[in-house]
Amino acid sequence: MREALLFILLTGVIPSARADDCQARSFGHGSVVCVCNATYCDSVGRTGLPDPGQFLSYVSSKTGSRLVKSQGQFQKNSTGAALRITLNPSQKYQRIKGFGGAMTDAAAMNILSLSSGAQDQLLRQYFSPDGIEYRFVRVPMASCDFSTRLYTYADTPGDYDLQNFTLAEEDVHMKIPLLQRAQALSAQPLNLFASAWSAPAWLKTNGALIGKGSLKGKPGGKEHKTWAQYYIRFLEEYGKYNLSFWGLTSGNEPTAGEMTNYSFQALGFTPETQRDWIALDLGPRLHSSSFPQTRLMILDDNRLLLPHWAKVVLSDVQAARYVHGIGFHWYLNNIVPPGITLTTTHHLYPEYFLFATEACAGWSPLDRGVRLGSWDRAEDYAHDIIQDLNNFVTGWTDWNLALNQDGGPNWVKNFVDSPIIVDSSKDVFYKQPTFYSMAHFSKFLWEGSQRVGVSFSQHTSLEVSTYIRPDASAVLVILNRVGIKKERERKLHDLLDKRDARTTKCLGK
Ligand SMILES: *[C@@H]1O[C@H](CO)[C@@H](O)[C@H](O)[C@H]1NC(C)=O
Ligand SMILES: *[C@@H]1O[C@H](CO)[C@@H](O)[C@H](O)[C@H]1NC(C)=O
Ligand SMILES: *[C@@H]1O[C@H](CO)[C@@H](O)[C@H](O)[C@H]1NC(C)=O
Ligand SMILES: *[C@@H]1O[C@H](CO)[C@@H](O)[C@H](O)[C@H]1NC(C)=O
Ligand SMILES: *[C@@H]1O[C@H](CO)[C@@H](O)[C@H](O)[C@H]1NC(C)=O
Image 1 (cartoon, rainbow, N blue to C red):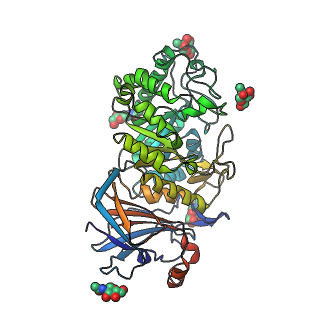
Image 2: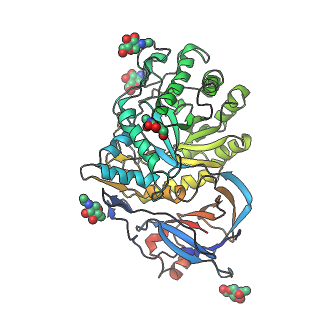
Image 3: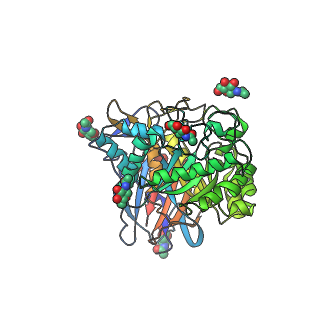
């Protein structure tokens, strides 16, 4: 059946307020976390396909449902439905690459602070077929703010040939073993992509990893060549541990080091200097290395810089030939509509994929750090992901895979939130509502799923994104942030608790 008619009133049936297997705990922030330890963790399990004529629904709600599964029947007669959603598979948009998070130093330290049994549970939650099946992992190259010290892999001044390039303890003893374990749990090869925060201080105008500074000299010069070679050396060293990289970004948040006296690791580029460094140094070096297939993403900074940044880099044929995609971050998304940034960029450069490379809750000075059980943050995630996907984005990467209860460690105290918060004193970890927001996408939107058209029988404030997967099944991801309208409230009274008004659903045909 290619054309699915779905009745929201039917799919809104929520079996009961509580999921049977989430060990729910409230910390007073709107909803609950699910508590996991070395021997127990709720798990979505493997999702099959519904019987013919049926659909499967997975619901997470503010009252504590977490991917609660039910099966329902498509109705032949839709006349009585309050809202009819019609898929139009002949309207085809982008294909999905996937979803994931970042193996920062902080994430690795937090995971390893648990007992080995709890570590396994946590990794299974993200990467295994029983978990939410992340396909992407962003790997910082050397230190960033989510580190406990400042370092790069080549801190010997004057080492232009990178003879003393060495991975750090954090790589060899923390991130790499965890990435290998994650890979072993994953049914498919993980797509790793690397991002660097700062070049070694001796290559930089300011002689420091932090603050305002860029590479000395000019693109094509020896500092710029060494910095390109640093990326190749990184790929070589990780290769020795059987970890190969799907992609690279041209560097984390280049505007941070360009425009401001930044408080943590940064390396400034303008769109023009990034373009020229790619055209003259990074692009040719990567192309002639043992890793020519590595996908290069430009920008890796806030989307409000689009489409300008893409225009500067990609209108240059010398740079553009080495570029595959455009990575961007979610900060400040509220001040720029996605249409004029993402969709405009897509239409200008349809052959370059758009990919969300970093996002986290709890970064804003007004709402900082960890909030255990925050439902608003789960909605923020789902809202942003749907908005991105409905504007041609092909994947979405969360920030730290795990943080401690302070939202760190972070050497500049730039504490934020994470979908998994670890309490090593109790050997437990908490799966936040945002973990399930990620799951509603990562578990169901397999690589190659194609976004398709959708229409509604009447105006709706539901946020919806619709797909046909490679196996020809249909997926709808629905976010309901609007609350139940008065007239519908009575009808639904027996079925829905009022507090269940905010639900996200994923339906597999
Ligand atoms: C782990 O969690 C389960 C379920 O909540 C509980 O029954 C068990 O006692 C916990 N184990 C430990 C060691 O606390
Ligand atoms: C569809 O249902 C409506 C009421 O819900 C009814 O009036 C109508 O006759 C039905 N149509 C068919 C073709 O069964
Ligand atoms: C590399 O480090 C060693 C000491 O570990 C030092 O003797 C050597 O000079 C360094 N090489 C370069 C090129 O900096
Ligand atoms: C890498 O993989 C090969 C072949 O699977 C294996 O023989 C080798 O031991 C692995 N090396 C490391 C460092 O894991
Ligand atoms: C930049 O910030 C640091 C503190 O993070 C401060 O010590 C330094 O003076 C500042 N530099 C400038 C040029 O403002």
